Image (tube, rainbow, N blue to C red; front, top):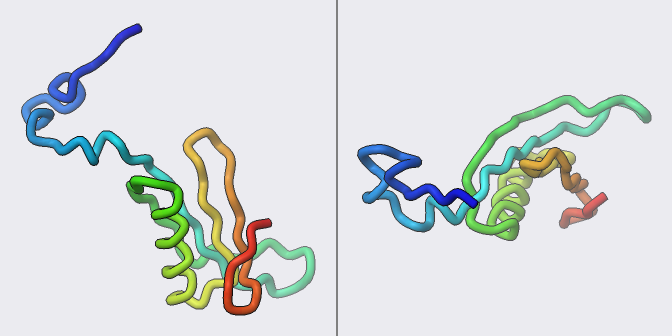
Length: 96
């Protein structure tokens, strides 16, 4: 098994990067408007990528942003190709 140091990953700055950077995950979050009709795919309102320490941090950020955007739904895409989809349910969010 190979192990790379921070210096090997980021030459010249590896020693100055905090451990928090290496303990995060890059997730993509998409926000959507309500579909115009039954069976119609919703339009993308906004799509962003960000580093998160935990899934809980990503979920809280996504929920707050979706609320601010008045989005109908949002999805969190995992690096492995799977996604979690959340839909507005009254004043909260429901995982589909």
